[in-house]
Length: 368
Image (cartoon, rainbow, N blue to C red; front, side, top):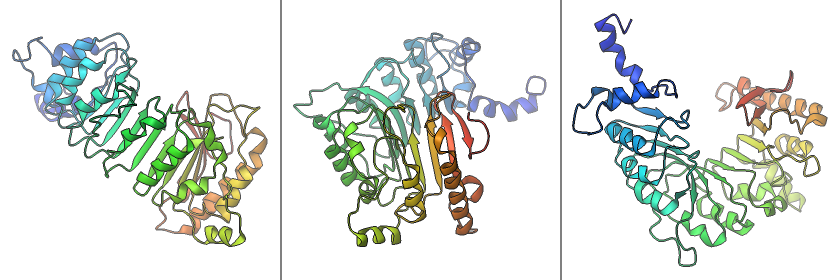
């Protein structure tokens, strides 16, 4: 209808260009429509102001770094969400990205070229509307002299961060804005337990979501989950490797155990990353999880998730316990009543396939 009716065209064209579905097949046409001339001041097009979400993640070698910069330059007056391509984004694209003042979300996580952290933040720190940032960085400063001029965007709420940092480089988090409520850390195997503890002491009181991936400090496996949660009183969702921490309370006296049961943490969603599961390594103690939810400090948990590799089922011998967990979570959600934060149909046990991005909710049926 848009092609044959001027009225339909006028009313629908803005919606069509708001979030274009870009792939290698149509990228050339998209570029010719958006950038009819290399010179930005010649033959400007009205379509550039309509694009609000630009997802270039499906492109591999269809673009170039200079073309990505040119596209960002054309979209700077309206772009709100940007997902970078893997191969055609680099440090020289940051100047154009920094001029997109309406950006709310930036995803640079799958960019193949390592981006220097200080140079990256120097470009993005003035984006006053930026709320969500996903990035994989390299460290472009001398940690012995301190990370100078590390300033994060002022209204940042969600950060997905991956960098090979160690304890000496922990000060890069010192300037986190108080608006930050969601933090994901991946590929930080050199961070010690003390560094994690300091991080939770400094920012745990504002975090609502905390996720740390499988390539994280192995020393965390000797700690107790209850101790981490004490530093994060507002945490609603926690995602962690399956072998990273003991579920048991870690409390020694009966009075401490009773107190933890009478004052459960507000955590609602607990997720275990089993993508690096090793049959010779640590196994999840499902009975401890059941006790912590039914009678202990995880009394507000209503969703339990397991992320795993395709065709790998580390829980195969624990189906009955998992079914009991699923029944327990649904029953607790039902008891919460009409005003429950998690409805009964959303409660229970879920399994996610990390490679395919698929989810199987509940216990019955074949694994995804």
